[in-house]
Length: 149
Length: 81
Image (cartoon, rainbow over all chains, first blue to last red; front, top):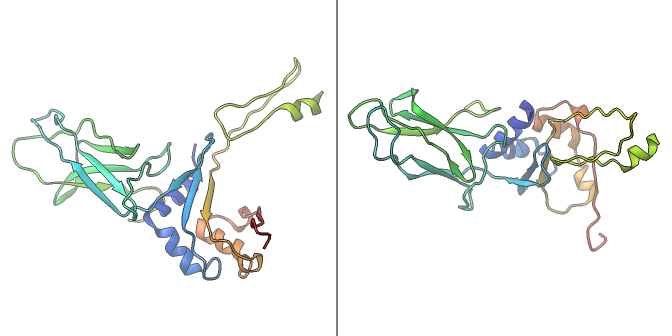
């Protein structure tokens, strides 16, 4: 039930875009926020909203056979600028997602190749490859709400 | 009785809500998609905070109509400044 506006604000904090806009607007003279927080609907607690600094493939997929989910599913962590693992991206209702595509075929998502980022990592469970051979896989964010890129 | 019901019912941002009702009470519960969003800012003078058109700029920043920027709560610093 989270609104599109709220989802967009969350995404812009993660990307750092909202801080850039804050400075451009000079919202409060020479003052820049140090941290953003959010309390989602029906929740009692406030959580930090972190800027994404980098994402790391900590466990590459392995044990992949034709048309069968890889025995080892990939795991990706997102880190903030202080090198902390980011626990949540997006909202509980609309988590950010990471997609797995082939290099040079970014419009083709692999089977089982979209996973939500929750509890500090991606949750792939069904990623599989469709044939024999060697593959180069690219992991990237699905364009989240409110973002143009 | 109506005033007693309103006074003893509690509404919190939680998965649980509590109501005091009698046999004639009708309750309409509406859930809002609102989020509480905050920025951590360093301590500053009230005059600094209001040095520009803060409400209008916040509205542009957040992508909402300026009429949506409504409430300000100013918390005094611990040393009384």
